[in-house]
Amino acid sequence: MPGVLIVYMSRRGHTARVTRTIMRTIQAQGTECDMMDVVEAKHEGIDWDKYHTVVVGAPVLYGNFDDTVWEFIEKHRSELEARNNAFFCLSVVARNPAKATVEGNRYMQKFTAKSPWKPNLLKVFAGKVDYPNWGFWDSLSIKFIMKMTKGPTDPNTVIDYTDWDEVEAFSLAVNEMSQEG
Ligand SMILES: Cc1cc2nc3c(=O)[nH]c(=O)nc-3n(C[C@H](O)[C@H](O)[C@H](O)COP(=O)(O)O)c2cc1C
Image (cartoon, rainbow, N blue to C red):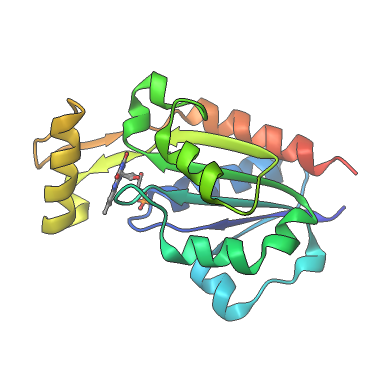
């Protein structure tokens, strides 16, 4: 049974953790599943014949997705479209339930408007606030975003807003999709 590949970008490790959870949940269903950093995919290439389903995941960084993610989508649009496919994103604004839906999350809306690839399945997750891990300038910028959206601004704050039950539900949906012809 051809497997699932999750290509991800992670600046500070949380998207990698979400990706690993998705991968392990899919593997626990008996489906082959691999994960690959988007930069590794660029340099090492992908054995596309191994995968029947491809998922791309990325965090929102300064209102956008990293260039490496856009490059991957542009370069591999035809490979993505030839398979079952899905896209998920993480953002701290999604800690607000109204912004944790595809329709309510402006970053996902921007993505769907801009992306030439139109994924079969979309998912918004809340990300992690991790000031101690972010470095001075990133922390400063995010404190500004937090101030505007009434979030935590204490420099010692570490809060994982991700709903891990939602991660599991998404993983099972991807697994189900991967079983389709
Ligand atoms: C440099 C930087 C910029 C960010 N910009 C935004 C933003 O514009 N909007 C938002 O909702 N979240 C923003 N976030 C929050 C991230 O999307 C969230 O923390 C995510 O979990 C980070 O995943 P990572 O650890 O895989 O990089 C930002 C985080 C960082 C580190």
